[in-house]
Amino acid sequence: MSQAASPCRIAVVGAGVVGMTTALALQRRGHRVTVLDPRAPGEGASYGNAGFLATELIDPLSTPALLRKVPRLWLDPHGAVALPYRYLPRLTPWLMRFIAAARPAQVAKGRQALAALNGEAVAAWQRCLAEIGAEEELLASGYLLVWESKRGRAAARVQMAHLQCWGHAVEWLEAAEIRAREPGLSGRLSHGLYFPGAHQVRDPYALVRCLAAAFEARGGVIRQTKVERIEPRGEGVRLHTDAGELEADRTVVAAGAWSHHLTKSLGLEVPLETERGYHLTLPERGQALRQPVGSAERRCVMTPMSCGLRVVGFTELGGLSLSPRARRYTSLRHHAGALLADGRGLDDTAEEWMGFRPTLPDSLPVIDTHPTCPAIHFAFGHQHLGLTQAAITAELVTALVMSEKPTLDLAPYRVTRFSRRWKTE
Image (cartoon, rainbow, N blue to C red; front, side, top):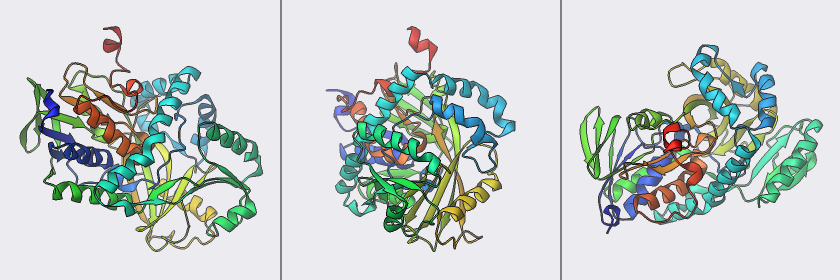
């Protein structure tokens, strides 16, 4: 019998949505699980996401089409891409990898891998929430993607056909149909795509707290402490934290944007970069829209939640230490004001937030076991899709811990895919 086939002590590093779904999945299989994070559950990147399962995002971030648009997006004062000048020297090696990932063969492989995860995302979330009696946290909302300019009609038709080829239900809407479906939007719209099968959560922070409460109610332990290093110890591991040492039989690294600090000491080269995500939440405008709405041209998303209307946007590659940039919130107000029929709440009453998304050059997460330390597993790097892919990732990494065959081929998500050492051995 393998070590994980009988109950054992497992440490999950990270109390975000990926870490908490993983902790619950492992606990469900009879293991004694401890979650470690310097913050309380859900207070990292999981707190501020757009709140809907973006299963239609099956294309990697790096594609030839996007690279052609980057200069314009970067120079636009309200553009969706930001590369802070002072961070560019440190960012350059990652950017070279990102550009290389735009090769057509690499994009095709990445698209296949993202589609595989996203295709299982909703069902995995339904299983996760049904098991803890929290089905109401997930809503069948639909999703609306809109264009303001008629110049985008051809691109929208291409995107619609592309997604339909991958099995997504997509409906074409003209301006009048958009107004009928979503009266909360301004009348300055040309056309849009509607995704009737899309889902959202009521509130991503409340969701993670719900997961944590269920985990603790079943005997799980959450320790608010920072893991500084993981040390293989025989058939188990020792976690060195700022509050002392912890022994475990297995560990899962699900520490989001901080995960590469732990993998480095384990001999693994993982080029993880930090996308700094910004949001506004309008507390009194939770009923301003009927469903999540994305703007294809402005590259932002607005989601009605129980905590208010969430406005999310931007790809700012700026690491973990730079301060938030105030003009990002100004741009979010600019975009939301142009899209909403009623822009109330975009003043100082809006909650401003910035968090860190963990992103790899090929846009794929790491879901794997250490190549030489079978007691150490990984579940991080989900970029914009952490909420979307959390529950299916939890099921997949749990299969690895249990020495079972995962339901998906995990080769595209291996931790060694960036390492020359492991490619040559």
